[in-house]
Length: 404
Image (cartoon, rainbow, N blue to C red; front, side):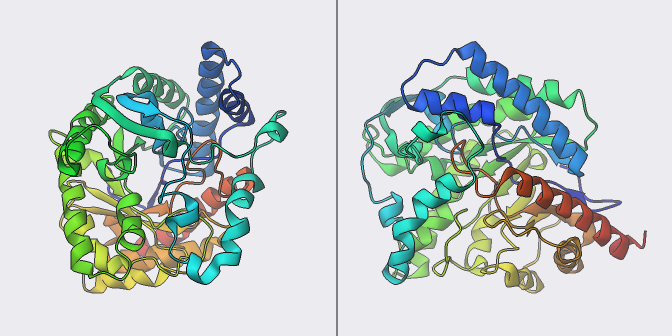
């Protein structure tokens, strides 16, 4: 990874709003219609070319493929891991209906929230009116019912598409997001004898994907939103120590999955859920930061701009960022369509830089703008305006921190 040695570098968390052509193909597939694989490969390849150009034009230094070839940040492994079986949709305790403890307080809000959020800013597609949203949480249809084996076909295609797109632009670096063992564990296990065995198997197969990405020359970003989320939906009302003990096992599995991969090629992302919801039950970053810093990564991407967590930049007065590490705080949000003013973005960057050192800060986003093809959090035009504000804020912060 690159430190911000001469100016504040910019990046984001990875998932971006899909093109209408990709959405159309995914809608047809979700409805059971035939989609020519060559057609899907073409629209993804064209989409990656476009999204890499737009990132570079927006002033983003460290870019990715927008995760355009994936269903969503977890479900994509259903196409890469043998042993995961797709089943008819079932209501589980991880569904949105039971996922958020806040429902006890905001029940009326949650009655209308999920469907509205899924549909509100879906890119135009001619068959959208036929899509009901029933596949909004594709990963909930997966179950582990056999030994896990990794198929590299899809990731090699993603790598090829990103390399091709990068040949047309000049950027500082490129990254690819992947899921952590503790987050894919949300897929129920009906095969392995224990959760330890399941996590170990996940770590083993994920190590293969991780290595392919790093060997291709990209930074590996590991996404792990489920581990922090579990603090409030699994351990509500229970001692923090009990949660931390549970989470330690997931962090150990992640470090096992990262075995053999240089730390300076890895960044670790956590968040508190990407939904535009009250977030009153989010854990404190102060409670989690010790876990985060145990991950064998050079970079740490954290939420830092939404109103529930923006104040937490101050924890770095007490917590020392280890030598050589990089902090990528979210300085623009992903869950509302308000575009941050560049001067506010700069202020947020400078707050962190003054505490952990300007060279150790990369300006980022709180989370992705579309965790799956069917879950855009903002309108595509707003997404690009936010990334442009991010880049402009980084330029303002650079002037303040370096005097140029």
